Image (spheres, rainbow, N blue to C red):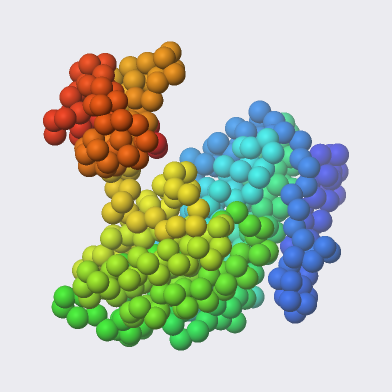
Length: 455
C-alpha cells in the first residue's frame, strides 16, 4: 500500500470536500428556487471568500491554461455532449457554435479572474446569462444546465492538476487555486439558474414582449428562425416602413431590483410608446428594448415625443434612440446607434430627456478623431485663456452666437448686452483664433471645437 505524503493527503481531502460540495449544490439551489429567492437567501447566497493573492507559480499555471483555452473549451463541450442527454440532442451547429463559444467565453472568464489578486466576479456575465436564456428554448432542462457547469468546473480543475504534473511545488500552487475555481462555478451557476427560471416562467412575458432568443437574433442581425419571422410580422412592416430601436436603461440599481425595474419600464413604454404606432418590446440584461415601426416623418416625431415622456417618468432611466432604418435588416444598425447614444447620455446629456443618435452623431465622430485635442487646443485654447485672464465671456458669447444662427441681434438679447458688444466680441474671437466666425469655414471649425469642449 502506497504511503501518502502530507501534500498528497491534503490533495485527496480537498478533492473529496469539493466533490461533496458540488454534488450538494443542485439540491441547495432547488430549495432556494422553491423559496422564490433563486439562491439569494442568506443561507445560500454565494459570497466570494477572502483569498490569498495568487502565487507566482499559480500565475504560471493559469497563464499556461490560457494558451490552451480553446482546447479546454472543446473538451468540455465533448464531455457535456456525451454525458448529458439534453445536450446530446442539440444539433451539431448549435454545439459547435453557440455552446462552444459560451464554453470558451466562460473558460476565459474564469482563468482571467484567477489572475486577479481580489476576484471581483465575472467580466462577461451578461453574455453568459444570455446563454441560459437560450437553453430554455433549446429544451435543455435546468438540471442539465447546472450539470454542464459541474462538468465544466471538474474539467478545469483536472486541467490544473494535469498542468501541475508531479512537481510538488506546482501541486501546492494548484491547491491555492481550487477554492477560487469552485467559488466561480457556484457564482455562475446560481446566476444562470436565476436567469433560466425567469425566462422559463416568462418573468417579462406578455404578448408584446419578444422571447429573449428571438430578440437577440434581431438585434445582432442573425439568421431568423421561422418563429422569429412570425413574431416580427406583428410590426406589420410594409415596403416603405422603417424601424427605430429605443433602449431604456434602468440606471444604477441593486441587482435584485433589476427585474422589478424592467417591468416598470415595460409598463411605461406601453403607456407612451405603443399608443403612437406598432411596437414590440423585449428585455436584454435588464435594459428594455423597443422596436418601433415608422411609416413617415410625423410618426417619427411622435415616437421621439413619447421617448421623452418615458424619460421624464424617472430621472434614473436613460432613454436613447437610433435612427430609423429599413425593415428587419435595419434593426441591428438602429440598435447599435441607440447604444452609441446611450454612451453619450451617460456622460453628456441631462437626465429626464431621451437622447437621439441623430443629435449626437457628431459628438461620437469627434471624440474618436485623432485630431480632436489639436482642434480643441487651437480653436478654443486662446479664448479660454483670454476669458480666464480678463474675466471675459468670449466662449459664452460664441456659444450663444452659434445657437442663434449667427444673428447678432438675437445673441445680444440672449446675453442681455448691446449688439455692438456682441460684434466686438465676435471680432475678438476671430483675432485670437485665426478663425473668422462670420464665414462658413470659420464658424464650422469653432462650432465643432465647442462640441468637443462639451464632450
